[in-house]
Each structure stands twice: as C-alpha cells, then as structure tokens.
Length: 82
Image (cartoon, rainbow, N blue to C red; front, side):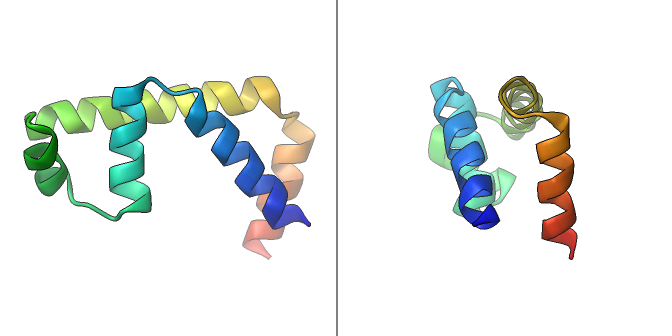
C-alpha cells in the first residue's frame, strides 16, 4: 500500500538525521509542539529551533531525493493529493 511506502520513506529519512535535527522535527511535526515550548523544553532559543528546523527539513529533502526516484515521489504526491 502506498501509505506504508510513505511511512517507510519518512521513517528511513528521519533515522538518518542528526539527533538535534531529529528532536526538532519530531517535536514540531509529530508531537505538535510550538517553537516556543520546544525551545523551553530543549533549553535553547526560539531562533535556534527555527534554524534547526530549516536545516533539518533541507536535510530530509536531500535524503529522500537520494533514496527515492523522482517518479516515485511524484506518484506518491499525486496519491496524497487525490
């Protein structure tokens, strides 16, 4: 099933992030934490969280593009939209 493939791609990419990138992406997107609350939890500033988020999203994109063909990505995105 295509949803399983999307989960597999995301899990694989997440596991390749640096720990500080992982904790920010996981906190913001999977635990639905705000930048402010995550900054307080991790003991860093809000700009640091934003910087790590931007860097981690860029890194995730690079990982996914290196592991998955553009054709498969386009196909999965179409299924997500539809």
